[in-house]
Structures are given as C-alpha cells and as structure tokens.
Image (cartoon, rainbow, N blue to C red; front, side, top):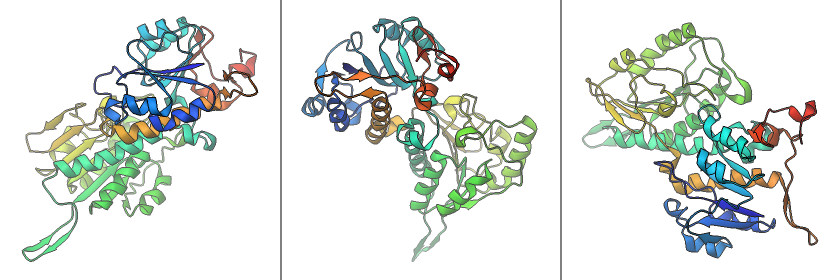
Length: 381
C-alpha cells in the first residue's frame, strides 16, 4: 500500500505531514511512502533526507494512485475528487468551514479523517494534533510579544537603576496558554492568567503564574475545552478583566471553543484603556478574534499606540518542530488502523468504527458522511 504526502498549497503553510525521522515507522509496517518533491523544504526536510530515510521522492501529482494521503491542511475539493475510491486521508479538515472538501471526499468514496475530531481521551493523547500545534502557538506568542514590546521582560539591577519586569497577562489557560505562560516566565516576565475553567488554576500556579479568579460561573466543556458563554456573562467577564488588562504590558489571548467563533474577550474600549506601547497577541484572530480590531496576519496599531498582533498560521512559524510533532500524531493515528505486513501477507487498513478514536475522527466513509456511533446502530464497519 502506498502513502503519499503532497506539498502544502495553502498560502502561509510551511509544515509538512511527515518528516524523514518517522518514515521508518511506516516502512516497517509494510507501507511504501512517496513524498512530493520539495514538500519539506520549509521544515528542513530535504528531498535527500527523505530518500535516505527510505521514501520515494517524485515531482508532480503523487496522490491520485495513493491508498493513504497525509497532509497538514485539507485537500481541496478537486484533489479529493482525484483520489481513487477507498483511499484514506488524514489531515486538519476544519469540519465547520471545510465542508466543500468533506463533501467532495464523500462523493469520491474517500474515507477522510479530521485531526480536530480526535477525542481527548488518554489513549488518543499521542494522536492529538490540536494539542501539539497549540504548544507551538503558545511558545511563539510569548516570543512575538517579547520581540514587539519596547520593554525588557526580566527585572534587571544595574548601576543606572532598577529595570522593573514586564507584566504579562494570558487569557485562556489551555495548552497554548500554559505554554505562553511558561515561555513568558522563562523570559523573566511577571505573569498572571485567567480562564473560565477554575480547574485550570492549579496548572497556572504550577507554572509560577498568578491565577485571576473573577468569581464567575465555571464553563467547563467536553474534552477539557471551555464551553460557549452567554453574552451577559461575557460582558460581566470583560468588565471584571478590564483593570487587570489595563495594567499589563503584554496580553496574550488564546481562548477558543471548538467549532465556534472565538469568544470576544477584549472590546475596543478595553484596548483604548491600555497604555501606549502595550502589546496584544491574539492567537484566535483566524477564528474571529478574542480582541476587537485584530486582523489575521497583521499588526494593527491603535490611535493610542497599542499594537495588536493577529495570529495567522502560527504553528507554521515554527515549521521544524511543528512538523515533527504533527508527523508523530499522524503516524500514531494511522498505525492504530493498520494491520502490519506479516508472514507474506501485505500491510492493510483495518478501519474499525467500534474504536472510539477512529469512529469520532472520521468524517466520511463508504461514499457518504460518517456519523459517529453508526456502527453501534448497525451501520457499516
């Protein structure tokens, strides 16, 4: 069976679905791995390294005759339509906004897996690409904030006087937020954080940061994510957060609700209350933005001199390690549904929808959209 990895064609995407270090994990299972020439150029994965690792490097279309196609972003509807019936794809599919590609996969008889849908259970941790890429985004957010800030981050004792440390506020203490906290702390900042889930307090404190408790209703959601809040609660939260935001030198926002527009944490009025030279890093800019006025891929400077950095393709700004982590997530998911070659029998796919991970991460199968739980109701396996 043949695995193909095409070059990413989305603007700004610098990651690659497989790095050379993981190729042998697939060839040992019995797969043939084909990489489109130049696919790993931004991730320091040269064609020569792929060849040395046991993959075949080809120019042009490598997906039309593949049994499995691995990519970072979703294949286009045209690419889905070019795949052979029964092929399997694994990628970020964006189930809410990527419906055209999902529909095309269903029409082509392709079984498409979306990494956003991998359930957050212990057994699936090694396949959780959302977590691995959020780790990269949180680290990058703190570095961007430090680079843009006109201030030192650490406290410095000098002959000319004492330099006071930067006050850093992180809104959202998920994986990205916790990594932003850890990185800002390493840089010497004084860090505080807020999350709608009080259970995050211990994690924030373990990073050496101060947890802000607004005494509001908890919003714990499924799988460890936050759930959506009412507008009334959102307004109260913004009111209570305003004094903390106003005294910060850097604010990093990471709040997200899977499948929904990012919650609005900061209004234009709240931004206007900040001092000139303050930096805001909005990691949710691509999904509507936590900060009013943020724009993906742009730095917006307000009339008062506050800079709002809107995140766009943030994990791709660290393509080497982002690709390395992503590759392992993908390989672990594919291995779960693989029966290795043994005793002369070739490698094969075993797409067992009684497995919760496979069932919940599949979006299409057998020429139609896949509904999780269908196998329990007598659906196809």
